[in-house]
Image (cartoon, rainbow, N blue to C red; front, side, top):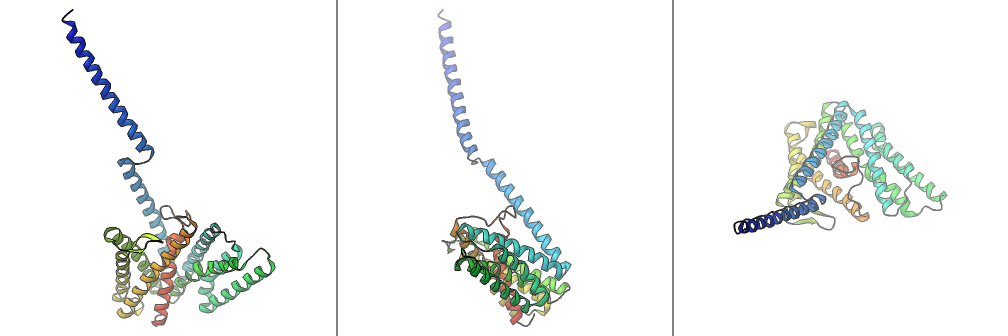
Length: 317
């Protein structure tokens, strides 16, 4: 009997040790389960980041391929593409303002959004003026004969297509100046300068950003990113001048890069302010990983308009 006592005591110690080990394992498993439910595990974060990157890259690549195909297919394909994009951007804009309590006339506004690029292709600046008069007349008639309409709704109905389509028509005006490769390359260069501005601003801002550009509107934007984006835009325009695209000279190219870079940031901040005013993150879900098409085109709207004015007053168009 005396020999069994120490053995039993040792067995009890081992049993207690095993129970404690099992309890620790269960506690760790419970802690991991809570983190797993919250998506906070390292593997989950890495997988989520990879999936978002792949989704964003894939949709962005498809978008770029479609744009390039239309640009080099000719002015008609470019016009139809811009018209479709303007319609969708205007639709997303109206969605945002409806969330803010406004009631625009979407039939009139979306109709004008489709017509602006088509008129720019067919009649140039005169066509844009004609569509603008038709838009104002339609909104005036709607206001007069619709008791529920108010002045704010009319203003939003007019502003929507001006913001999303009249500005977008600048790309059509640049593309139709030459129906061949020169016009396509110049238009692509304008768009590339906007994309480069966005990309380098993000890279520089995320790595070196220390001074906030507009913290109440877009907390992640910084002055360092702003300057990085301007450099990228200027480089693209100077490269076009170096390759002799549309006889673009270096001084005008630098001016174009500066104006497009600044206008692109203003366009981005403007749309961010719209969304922040109604408390939404994205204008839509048209492009996975990017949000809505207006989210993807906000910089392009103002950037392409700035490019048109630089090229027009610079004697290129």
